[in-house]
Image 1: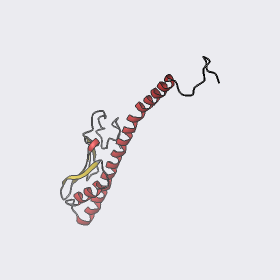
Image 2 (image 1 turned 90 degrees about the horizontal axis):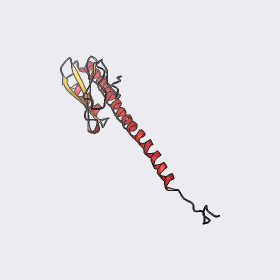
Image 3 (image 1 turned 180 degrees about the vertical axis):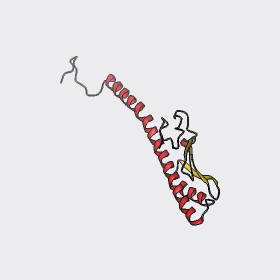
Image 4 (image 1 turned 60 degrees about the vertical axis):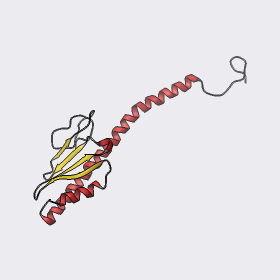
Amino acid sequence: MPGPRGGPLRGGFTLIEVMITVAIVGILAAIALPNYSDYVTRSRIIQATSALSDARQKTEQLFLDTRTYVGNCTAAAAAASATITAFTITCPASTVSTYTLQADGVGPMTNFQYQIDETGAKTTSGTPAGWGKPNPNNCWAIRKSGECT
């Protein structure tokens, strides 16, 4: 079959078609990658807050058996920390009648820190640059905007 100049018609793509395709893929990647990164960060935060809630429940159950938080808080924190990878759950303060459970970010989550105490008071601190200031009310910030649960 003759081409536009009388020569044979060749199959393939023109440089313009390839450049348009590359531009479209680049635009889609520029939109998708930051959103995916935020999604992964939020999922890790949910794992940490769920682990803190589980550790709090376990601490309260152990308190009913022993009538003290000393030791029980640390055991519950260690059990909860074993289930997640992006945070470490610890019990930095416990007495007979009070405790504080804390989730500290590890690796890419380094600047995130969440706490809960025996009264159920939740606090967020150490959120990295680019994340909004958390709501000071009794909650854990889980989104860039500072939105809480």
